Image 1: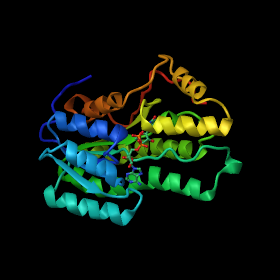
Image 2 (image 1 turned 120 degrees about the vertical axis):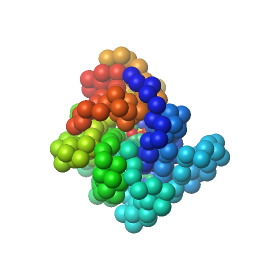
Image 3 (image 1 turned 180 degrees about the horizontal axis):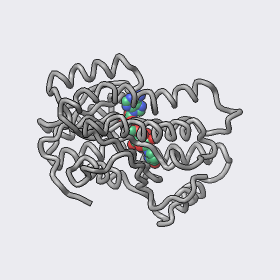
Length: 261
Ligand SMILES: NC(=O)c1ccc[n+]([C@@H]2O[C@H](COP(=O)([O-])OP(=O)(O)OC[C@H]3O[C@@H](n4cnc5c(N)ncnc54)[C@H](O)[C@@H]3O)[C@@H](O)[C@H]2O)c1
């Protein structure tokens, strides 16, 4: 894995104020990039503003699932730069836990809106800036649920499989512009999101959180949690020159997850 510098790179990250997005933000800053981060959560945004007094970090409030918000965000970014090297489509919610009969159409629509349509808003705005740069990279956050079935999480699985389809298609559309498009499929990440996912699944199945946690970890051959930094390292590699001919790939960072149930 590269530790190549990201000096002078300009990188846009959606939902980058906490979780995996924050880990990506940090590694990009550490390696010298200028980072344009957006997030919907004011609390996380304020925390990030306080923690990182870095002239290369620009932080914006934006609901990624609202087209107007995303267009406004890019208007602000375009006041700072007319080209970017990378877009990280990180935004994605877990969605509800339950069998299809128990889920509402709101649950479905909202999960698809935040996890898929938001990527369209960001990507549409980013492509002209990547073209001006004469190349670059788009990284879409999919999931193990984008390559396997995921019982009790049907809207999430649908959204993450959609991201794989978009990634493959965009890589074909944008290759001639030297824009590379890849998807990362994280495994079970140690962090706040999985605390909530484990709680909801234990409640739905009326079992203990400990047993659900053990089950999740055992889905990886390496019988291990995956860490936010593992995903950030992969992003850094994919942005760097070391990955200059890698496109259209669906990359698991999951300790070899063989099932998701
Ligand atoms: N955590 C995991 O185990 C895991 C596993 C596989 C894939 N993923 C994917 O990785 C990505 C990041 O996951 P995470 O665990 O860091 O997520 P998370 O649930 O911890 O949320 C990260 C950030 O998203 C922001 N956010 C939520 N809705 C938003 C919206 N509409 N607009 C803007 N920001 C919004 C939140 O405020 C938060 O700061 C997601 O696409 C997720 O589906 C996560």
